Length: 401
Ligand code: NDP
Image 1 (tube, rainbow, N blue to C red):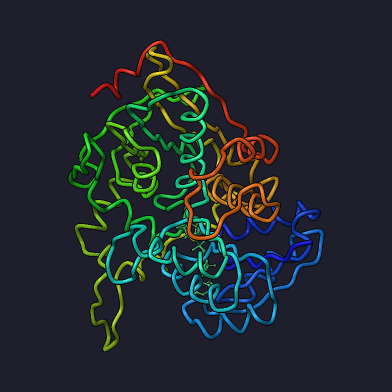
Image 2 (image 1 turned 180 degrees about the vertical axis):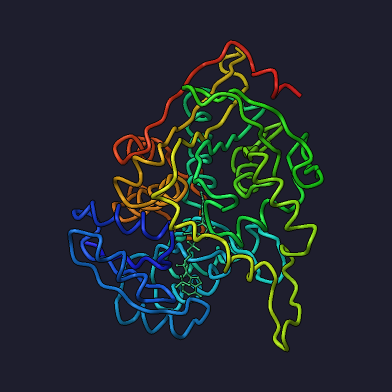
């Protein structure tokens, strides 16, 4: 018997809600809350079991506290935006509820995300006897768990880790993002950063790129070095890695549109005055771009996200690739969402299941790689995100330096 409160009725929220609803033995009661209640009701109407819905402004701690007191969940799954992480954690502490999210906190007025703000809650969650599980989507999330799995079963010491995120899907739009446009564009336009020999090194945004031949018929795609949040916790929790990088694929059409939008100032996050009213250009841009949640119907193709690891086991050099392939159309058939929301929402549901069944437990604030990866990896295979592992003869040439 457990009650879960899902906050955020967007693309990811839809998948988490569907997947929790499909697991009634664990998630006996579900409430979906978001700023706009009609969006929760629309998702609830797609399900074949009854859930409750509610309106909540997750920027407002007293409003959250009142909802938590009223509903009394065992766990909050936060799939609103990274801006709301701290207010939701504050409310969980006040009422005594466990917490899970998929993206680390980011202040609205600065395009910067890092775990420091949330790791600072460690003592408070510990003292309250509560657990907060951070970054339990796909990346961050499954990529951390893939790394922990490789570290546990195949390596004595990981030397290099390359995380490769490929979306080989096509949504048929000139320009659209696969998840929240504001968060996505802030991430993509930031400087690249990677870990090498004990320090972070920076690159200009999307400056370093390589072509990688993705498996199972996806084929060669251009991928770009970016900073991504899972590296911050992996550097800490999987020590001794000499180099860690994150790569994401982008098509030329996406990059050309993005460059134009940046050049004309539409990706700015500082307020400008328009018709006597302050607006933030990036928020305005979000309002005119397609809602990622609406792209499911038209998106075809597959995603391939995984980790290429090399290092040593029993004195022998090993090269290893672990990945998941996810089909956009199959996701839509199952839960009315495209694969980017699906690959985020399914791990959030599995993480919640790990917490509610006590397979993962602790008091304080945790990243997913701190727990035993095995039960989570089993759940991926049975909940729509099967993974593949292959040992390579050598590290792929494009990742050598
Ligand atoms: P969407 O924009 O589709 O959905 C976000 C939802 O949050 C919206 O429904 C919105 O409600 C709600 N929301 C926003 N602000 C508030 C607020 N103040 N109070 C209550 N609800 C609010 O985003 P996605 O579903 O694409 O992404 C959700 C989260 O998942 C993000 O944090 C994103 O960074 C993360 N993510 C993580 C990934 C991973 O692999 N780890 C990958 C992709 C996304 P309304 O519509 O009513 O305004």
